[in-house]
Length: 132
Ligand code: CO
Image (cartoon, rainbow, N blue to C red; front, side, top):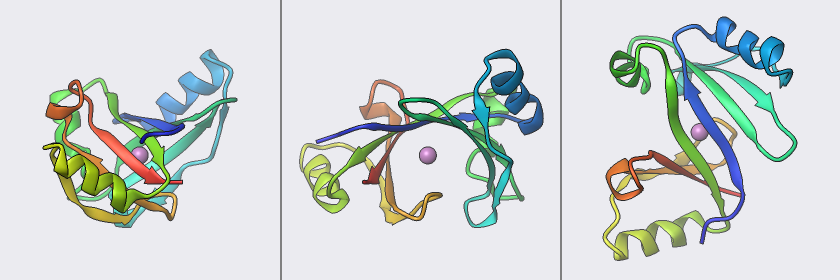
């Protein structure tokens, strides 16, 4: 069902400092910050040869990563995103096998349909599926 690793998302309270770690310490190519108010985050993309790292900083009052950063004040891995060919078929198959799908597929930060899966069913990791 799952295909390529699309990205790993890391939450941070300090986007500039975190981007500098990837750029200056790890020598990666790092984008300028993008504000995504409809998703409650500002992102920096770290381009790697085989995937991306997305650094996420809360934006606005109701940011979906605010709670995570309360529990993880130094930041940390927030979710991992796998590509699927057909997100509705993937959702239905996972639901049929008893997995907890969080909400309905919606347009994500890359303009593609995404849906999240509850960490309790996925080895303690929040999983995002993105329609390739
Ligand atoms: Co993501």
